[in-house]
Image (cartoon, rainbow, N blue to C red; front, side, top):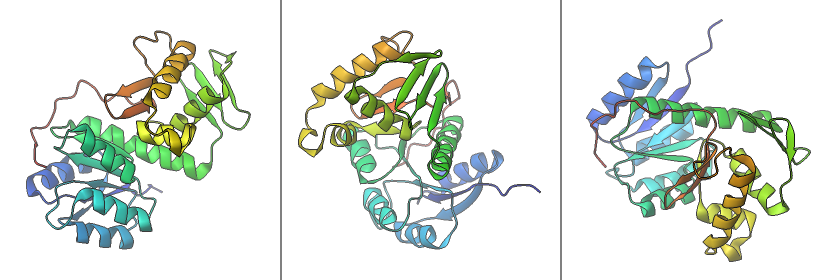
Length: 244
């Protein structure tokens, strides 16, 4: 028996972008549900059995960040922001509001597909409550709080481990500086970004083959960090869609 296609809810007011998404994602095996406004999108998020949502920030009836907050009140549906707004402030606001990932226009359909599948994998892992995370030569045992690189145990400090465990649980997704500082060091340290730089450097020296060119613990400039989960959506021609 064939499994049903994963259903993605596209909340986007631009018809050209919706057509592109419907054609490209449909051709890659996704089921599509569409909404032209924030209100329609919120109603469908409540009623439809979507696997995840793509949200534009420039909707005609409400700001996309407000829509993300509204969806988060009723659902844990993974949310990817797709927007022409490339300012760090916009990315941080959307991610802190509850979005799981952010992709700017113009975008490659291959990268979009990879990001969506990373969101699905993360949701599946959360449901299955997996306790061992394997990535290349790295193995992180979340139950025993142990980390291995090429079968050799890597000794981490308590803070290094908390930082890594947070990124593992959000694997494939960008985690903002504010989110990391709040969860690892506490709410009173959300502006102490120098802590994060120091400990990320230490983690890279222990886990990366070349800390100066990290393969796993990558920087999202001005926004946060991402633990790359194996998807490599590079070298795919970008679409010319540039709307907000």
